[in-house]
Image (cartoon, rainbow, N blue to C red; front, side, top):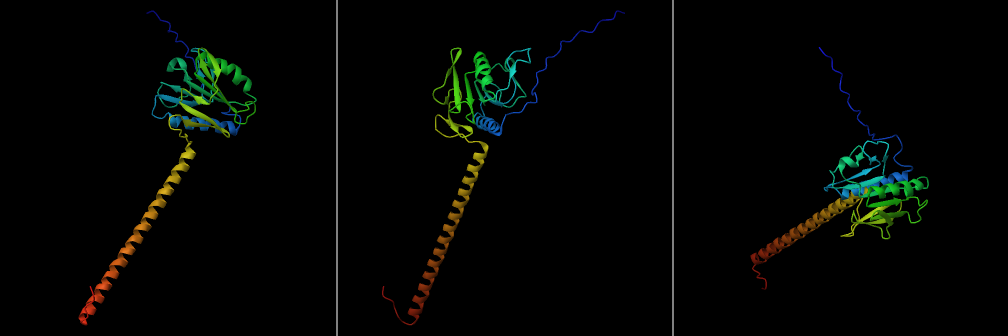
Length: 244
């Protein structure tokens, strides 16, 4: 009987989903990331798109060291929902928009390496938001791909998202281009819902009070009519016929 050697199986390449580094440098940066993730996730709900935050973007198959972790990235024409990481060759789509919450400590990497990488990958828009205004005086700077190179965005408007952007303190505000409506983060939605609920309750209470007042007036009118009829009967019983 001839023994056969086992067939060697190729080693499966491991693509980590985390490296133990913090999500953000400061609370301000973390808040800006979470608020952007929250707003854009709600905005794109129901569409073939996903929004990921601080997750590895792998851009070269077979080379797990070639990765970057954008603070927020928006990818269109993919299945919605979260991922442990994002591999371009598996999904078939490059992110359309990337936001980096930058600081004086990360500015060099954000405005050189990442900007060049995203440009080469074909990311349509790259936005740098400096919540503390440490090196971007106006806090927000965007770049849009024209041909194969990035050009500064002069108007704070995202073409892929069709949203107008505004600087609102330590976060980015997003507004629909078609209606001008502001997109709210969850805490704002809850507050608005509570206000609307309270207004509805107050309106219902006011309507009920008005109904009760009307009912009281009706009852008083009926009582007055009954009293008038009784007096009329009493007068007729005494032989007095009131004037018509």
